[in-house]
Structure formats: C-alpha cells, structure tokens
Image (cartoon, rainbow, N blue to C red; front, side, top):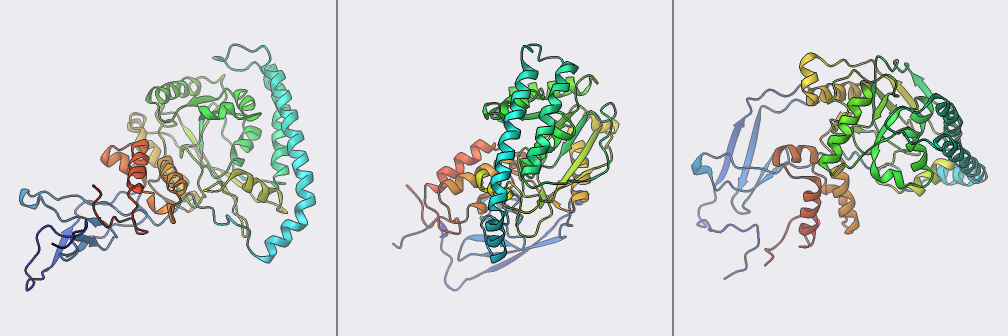
Length: 422
C-alpha cells in the first residue's frame, strides 16, 4: 500500500471520475464602516479532489467539510494580511550614500553620544532629588518636586537633540487637561515617550518590566507610572481602575496611553487595547510621523543598539507630531469601550493615511518565536491575533505554544507538513 501523506484523501475516487466543483457563496452581511476595502459579494471556491484542499480567491485555505450533511458551514483558516506592521524598511546599511554619510557623521556621533550620556546622568540625578523622601505615591506629586523635574524634562529635550531631532514639527495644540484628561498616541519608536515626557509630563501606562531598566525606571517612576502586566487579568483590571481614578481627578497629570501596546513601523495602525476607553472620558488622539528616505526610524523588528547607532549617524532625523481634535464619547459609547476605540482608531488611521489591521502584540510574539527558531520567513506566522482571540478565544501565549509545537514537526518552507507525525 502506498504511503499516504497528510494531504491525501482517505477514500480514493474512481479514476474515471474527476469532479471539479464550483460553489458560489453569497455574502449578505454589510461591511463594517471601518473596513478600508469593501468585501466581495461572492466567493468562488474551487475544490480539487486530487489534493483534498480547498482554495478561494481571497487566499483562504480550508479542508473539505465532513459535516456538510448536517448543514454545517465548516470552517476555514483565513490567510494573514500582506501588511507587516513590524518590519523596519532599512534594517541594514545599503547604498554608497548611506556609507559615506555614516563615515562623515562618526565624529558627530561621538559628540552626540557624550551629550546623550551627560543629559541622562543629569536628568537621573535631578529625578533622584525630586523623589527623595517622597512616600505618598497615591496622590499627585507636590508642585515643588514637579518644578525640580523640569531639569529632567530639559535633559529629555537634549537627548532628543543628540538623536538628531534638532527641531520637531508640531501641528495643533494639546487640549487643556480639564477638557482632555486622556491622550492616546500611535507608537513607532522609543522617541515618542521621551518627547511626551518633555512636552506634556503625563502619567503613562507601561509594562512592569520598564521599572527595572537602569536610569529609565527611576525617571518614569517620577511620572507616577501605572504599571500593568498584559498577561495578568488582575493587573489589567487594577490598571483600568487606576486610569479611571486619575483621569477623573484634575489634580493628577493627564494620562497617556499607547493603545497599540507595542511599537510598529508606522505603516499601519494595529488593534487597540481598551484601557484608555473604558473610563469613557474625552480623548485627544495624537499622531506621530517620521518622514524619511534612507533611514527608517521605526523600532520594528530591529535591535535597539543598531537603531540608536543609525540615529546617531544621521545629519538630521525628521519627526512630526499632530494633535487631533478631541473625540467625545457618545452616551452609548460610554458603555461600549469597543465602539469608542474603533471610532478613535478610524480618526487616527485617517489622519495618518494608513490601514487598520487586527495585529496585536501577540503577532510580535509569534514573529519573535519564529525568528528565534530560525525560520526562513518568520513574518508568515503572523495571524492578526486580535481577530483570532475574538473568534476562537485563543490567547497569545497559547498561540506561541501552538507555534512552538508546530515548528517542532519541521514543516516545509510553505508551512505545510508532508506527513503525519506519530
């Protein structure tokens, strides 16, 4: 008996019978307003019985439906989008111009490194003085301590200068804290938190791991940071309650959140976490752009030391910050954070002129896991985890575990298994 692989049918059809079935599926559902492309009215599926795999025009792969006699629609696994929101477009130095520029900027880079180090040390010492003896962290920082933090804020601007941001173009103005207690921003690089620290001195929501970063951990504690563990439901609930408490009290600084939960390349807006929207307060969105030609400044799938070196060796790095109009939640959106987040996301994506996707931090975890296991194309394992979690209730940690088990079976470069593993 011939060996059967995983794609072979269990029952062979007679050799004279080679059916080719065409199914027309009508989609009666209206497309969501947030979709940037209208869905096709019909989908034509071509089922090849020789291979036992179904393909459709949208690139979906689905197995033959064994439950058709029960009038079940079966299931399909949607193909991942072609958009990669984490890919840095210039991960390597290429071109004669870039090489010459880096060589010419090396002496400048050394001076910038000295300025960066000195500003970081002075800012750290000023922050230590401002925090000395302060125990009441549940209430706003006293004004005299906030005045001392101006030294650190000025140092933050020198740090931006050392990275090549000699001037920063601004459009619009931040709304008063009393009107917009919550601000949200897209997240492209580690530069935005430094800029917002200098510009707004807000309370930020950050991962617990940031507290252990040398120098940086001390400085963000002065911002009365709200720490959160994204994988702990209890931690997320406590963070939401703290956001509500501080946003509703004008004596606290405004609350700044990056609802995407991670950095992207700025070419797309990925799914939003709901922490900023549950409280139902007015929100001012802020968008950040990094126009470039030869050097992509995004902190995508690239190491931090490499990104810093490239920034130090540029003549100038461009940055644009735009304060968008306030978004006021309607009465029903105060009860529905998902709709409020969608409305805010559409406004930011429209201003950025980018697409919205259902990627999340979970996709970055899958990407890093595939790269760690030395996959040739690690980006093909991203599945838009926000949609997967919503449809199938699979967490990011579970997805990474599934990927680890799948890759242990040595799939081919197209991510298919040639034979069953027993």
